Length: 304
Image (tube, rainbow, N blue to C red; front, top):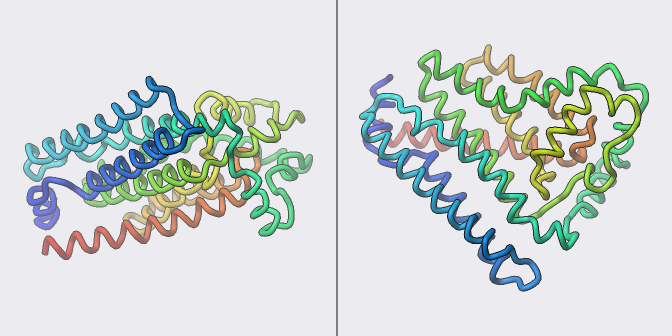
């Protein structure tokens, strides 16, 4: 570990990742409060509200535990302090569906707005037409495998940097990926879009009832949170990881780029997202990657 990274780890009780988690917790709590208390027609149940508030408290507790683990590590790498987003991001994604549940019950989604953007941008509903194109069978397997590899790849990318002792680079990538997810989650809460599977159903032709497509569909059916279509967090996070990887360790970035591109294509091909969702996800990735670089540049300058 370099002298600069030691200063960053020891001198600051809270890391950028901690501040980011606290900021998301505050934003999510505010949205939940407005939806459950301030709007009479959109309320979660008392039990659900209690669970969600408890989850927010646990997020704060987890940040404090990470800060304490970082303090006790005294400059040495700490797994808990750096990798707790693995738990946070999964739990928070599940809470998005719970917070949006009243809107789902009321049928209040912004799909019509997004479909209008899709038509204005591409002149057609790309996901609906492409998923029913009989001439695109050959790409099913590589696209489905890339989509299913999304979470393992996002874990493996910073893990490879960590394994190569590039701990500060790994921290930066974890922060960038987390920032990307949190940005998407806030948009899901403010602007819930159900997505093509909820409005059009899954295509029933042989290409989309075979094993590759069925694996993707099962994953969505069992683990999706309603209202999380726009922007595509799959595209956003994979693109952010690829761009950060190219900057930190080029061989890693070159391995991530084809996976990110395949995910961008696959979410539309399998009709998981509108094409405009994928485009917005790529835009989010560009912004969060730039923000991550600025945070780390400022951090290094402060520690110099």
